[in-house]
Amino acid sequence: MLWSLLKILVFVAIVGLLAFGAGLLMETSGGVQITVAGTEYTLGPLQSVIAFLVLVFLVWLFFKLLTLLVATLKFLNGDETALSRYFDRGRERRGYQALADALMALASGEGRLALTRAAKAEKLLNKPELTNLLVAQAAEMAGNTKKASDAYKKLITDPSTRFVGVRGIMKQKLAEGDDETARKLAEKALALKPRHAETQDVLLQLQTKAQDWAGARSTLTAKLKAGTLPRDVYKRRDAVLALSEAKTLLDETATIEQQEKAIEANRLSPDLVPAAAMAARAYIAKGKPRYATKILKKAWEAQPHPDLAHAFAEIEPNETPEERVRRFTALTRVHPDHPETRLILAELNIVAEDFPEARRALGNLIENQADARAYTLMAAIERGEGASDAVVQGWLAKALNAPRGPQWVCDNCHDIHAEWAPVCQNCNSFDTLSWQTPQTPEIASATGVHMLPLIVGALDDKSEESEPDAGESQEEDAESTEADVIEADVELVGDENRT
Image (cartoon, one colour):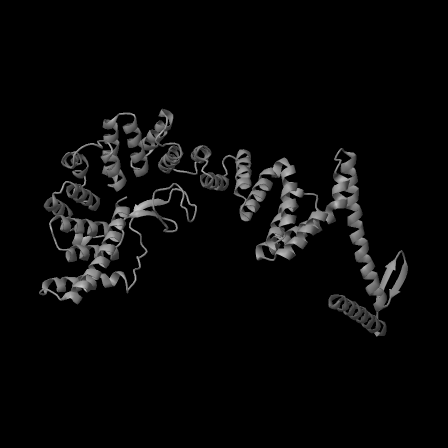
């Protein structure tokens, strides 16, 4: 309403200005004299202005007729579109101007204005490969998903814009959470453009999320052929996918073919800990302990890990603790100062009841790099050497309050996993889990774990006193019972950490 009123006021103002100007010209003296073929014409000021405007119009009309004549001659000479181009030139000019305005509005984040300009360009221009894409993007920015979907479907019908249409609908399905349909559309888009890097990444992520390991390996190979993935990264990720494929198949009743998949995963990346452990177990199942030992030693050289030690122990399940200590020398002599080596040696010697040797194996680990597992082992050593319950419980109290040590942590979101997985359960990123100490500090209750050393200290003080009376004896028994419960909980924590 206001815009219409404003236009009326502007029109009235222009008419008033023209009338005022015409009145001034009529009151002005003088004029223009023109002599044509001996005849003299005298024009007043207003007539001179009108004659000048008529002359300008005639010049413009002359050039228009001249271009029409040129277009007609081109048409007669065989150019079938010459006349249509002439008549559509103004329409195209307005259409391209609307297209430019739509692009500027789209870049400025004005979705509704871009949609309006794009609709105008669509009417004026006969170029659906441009206008449909612009309409789709403007509709998405304006929040009109239905119109955007219709525009993408129009793009699919044209072979030259089919990839853009499929990719646009794929992104819509991803935004809606329909991963299954998005994965099928990504496969179709990749078939249309096999070297498109973004589509390869999207398809790979969707395939790993859906645990389609065979399809993911095919996509990974396509990325290598397209040159968007270095060969060393390709080998690592192909090993992860092969391991994931084997992990879903390998169990107690695994066939020879399934066991070979685990061995293939280790061959592709010998330093991948889960692959080495699984391949070793496959060789153990096939009755080839020497191959299993070789695999585990090579992986241990790259990175000592408790999973490798557990797999190494399964090679000879019926050996005595003393024999196991001697056999584990093949691993422990590789990185003798590594914390994992010291912890493994301490555990083996505790099982063999050689507690002084277990203490020597831990060495200065307690002072420098102690974690819950080291403190739990120290408590076991103290108990094996006959220390008092107060001393044992003191080490267990430290274990409750200590960091849990290295774990499987996502490099992307830093989420902690109980076991290795090819895809992070939190952020769905692929091949981002690594064996490391979490950066997030562990929080304990100030009135719980932090009070345990004080409780243990109180028990120690009471043990140094003379024979207590009956009431004190009952109180000490109650505290001892509570400490036993704490000790049992800590032993469970230590077992989980070792696992």
